[in-house]
Image (cartoon, rainbow, N blue to C red; front, side):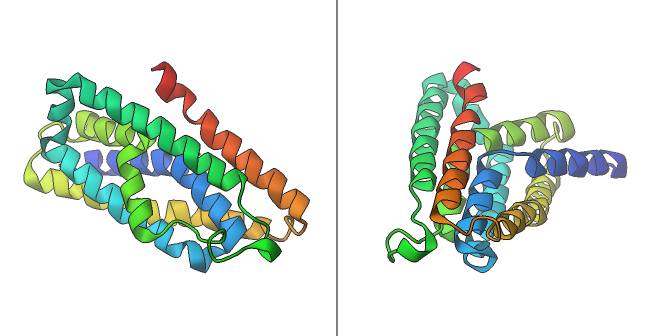
Amino acid sequence: MSHDVLLALVAFVFVATATPGPNNLMVMASGANFGFRRTLPHILGIAIGFAAMVTLVGFGLIRVFDTFPPVYTALKVASVFYLLWLAWKIAHAAPPADRSAEAGRPLTFLQAAAFQWVNPKAWTMALTAFTVYAPDRSLATILLVGVVFGLVAVPCTGTWTGLGQQLRRVLTSPRRLRAFNWTMALLLVASLIPVVYH
């Protein structure tokens, strides 16, 4: 991969990773509800899980969808239901004073990493990256694309988490926090519209 193509790939990954989507909306809500430190495993799960997924896509996992289109349809259906469930969890997150151990847990590292496999935006980003910036799919290029996604994801999702944490100053009443959580849940559901109608 040439230097110019690498810079273009980094720019694409930054824009795609920094813009609103399921991952960023979830870490923002998590930052507001649980703080930055408790959301850190979620951030790292996104970065490492997404890098792993992108790398496997580059090694040819996408050919499974080309060969067996119903598998892709099943993935889309699973993605929609899983995101709806996450939106429900965000909308019904308990206010800080009411949190039990069960109600007050952000996503773990493994849950966030596994989520990348049903995140429609993640699939779109991975497919675009290899189609446009790394069509040769050599071993070095595949690994480089995976590393770029992993490295760029940390500061991008970290920024959204920090924004959510700063909102905690405003979300001082249960009513405001509930309104914020419902807004984040509705935005997460709205992020499904392109998936459902594509």
